[in-house]
Each structure stands twice: as C-alpha cells, then as structure tokens.
Image (cartoon, rainbow, N blue to C red; front, side, top):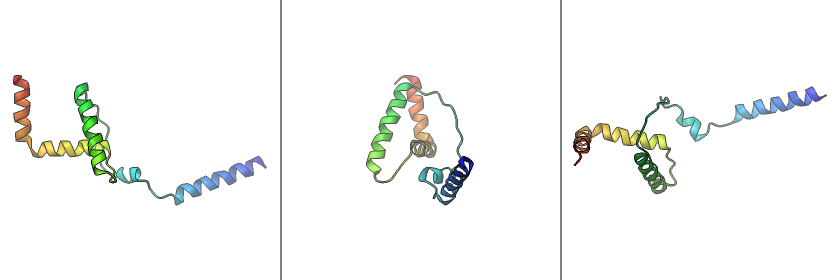
Length: 95
C-alpha cells in the first residue's frame, strides 16, 4: 500500500517536470559559457557590484544577470582596445 502511494507520487512529479515550461534562467543556459576563475582587486569588484546594481535598477523591468552585464562590459572593452591600452599604460606609469 505504501509502495502504491510512493509510485503515484513519483508519477505525479515526473508529469510535473515534463509539463513545466523552461524558466528564464534555463533559457539563458544556451549560451556557450563555462566557469573561469579570475582574481580581481577587491575595490574593483565592489565598483563592479555597484555599477551592476545601478544598471539593473535603470533597465528594470528588463532582467539582466551579472554575467550578461560583465560580458557586455568586456565586449565593449574589446571593441575599444585603443582606449583600454591608453588607460592601462597610464595606470602602469602611475599617472
């Protein structure tokens, strides 16, 4: 009797999973992403967090993930490498 109840509940769970529509997070997983470890300055990470929160607030009700935000920042930097090099050289020279 207990087995019948467990089987019934198990079938119900299987049906729920099959009928479920993919969430926005699951839909975003189609990106070709992998986990990478980067060691960044704590102050920079705090600035990134603050800028992300401000951007997230400004684009509301649109949803943006931190990964999407960082990818956009990196893509922009790659498209403007001349400016990044100038910034990098000035930071390295201490001015």
